[in-house]
Image (cartoon, rainbow, N blue to C red; front, side, top):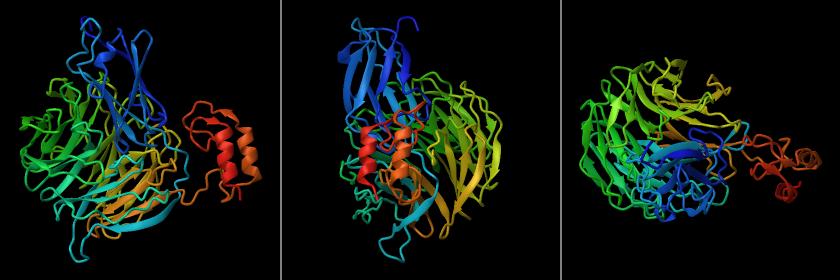
Length: 523
């Protein structure tokens, strides 16, 4: 755009599925930038599970390319959001557009067989007879030790209950921290973020029965400060985190089912939010919500699931804290929750829904201009409440998991084109309510955290069970055949990710470090 600094290219590419968690994040502008305008407030990233990406900045290509080199690896298989503020400028004072620029991508997950081993079942109850109604889970690292912690949102006890990862590679957790962290009644929809930009993960939660949103700032040790509670519309059912106005911080948007509208909560940059601004979301009974760049313009849009009209409406982000509803598309049912990701590998975002009353889920392919194709519907167990995407087998595409209140958890595998096939189910003790796809034991593949809201349990399932690093042929031992496989694959992996056989440390090259790991596990 004439008269403004513009983004030419980004790496990892927006919507990409196979970024290296060990890699850097870079932006190339159409003009040289002033290095003094690049800092942790103007160019930063947040991994959904690894948290704020801290690191150092370097400049190349005549200061047109800026690279953020993380101090620590991000998590395998997680989604990452990058935010550029309108404060970035050239030495002559030409600034990035007022809307800023934002994009999202996924980190690659390691190859896995989708053979899961039960690890543990953790209660969210303080006393056996006192139900907490565990209905919502976040797996963001709360103490920056590089391991996924689990924060559970509880409707009846109106609090957050935090399980800290034991950080020993077992995938096990300590009992939840007490005292717990108060929010308000029937809290459920939740998202992580770094609202005060102190490098520690925070959480926002919608409280359905009190028509409010709670924001809890993390202390960096698994605990949270007192919640800031803001009154929004009646029955908030969905929540999303994004920079709506280009100032470089994370704002909050939520749906209000009975008010039949949406709320924007603007962040002052210190994690303090102002009173809501309301707007129409384009459907009847706005319920489900996510934030993604559906129009490929570097401004995050809103994907709204309207329950009564059974539609999905993309609300185009204008970059000035306003949104424009686009043409609605059928959701295939009364949508309860939705998520997004490029499921067919065409470089644009798609949508996956859970349609409770119809006992189905739907996939809607995006066209990169805000349009959605008609839903492709798959049956689930009765009354699905949750839908989640993640690469469970490390083949470079997103698989799908649904959670059904009157049934179980279903896993569907993706053939790479966005065509899904039922793979397996996990039996719920009472009510399969939600799930988190995250690497809890740091072996680079995605495990399952399954939450049952009636039994108040968090069930941990390890992907590939007790796989041994270096066991390339999967026979349960590391020996001569694995060594020969490693030698045959020696050198750079072709078109990596997905990771190749022999790449034990998942750096896209089979070399001496992989050999040493194999040797250390020789049996």
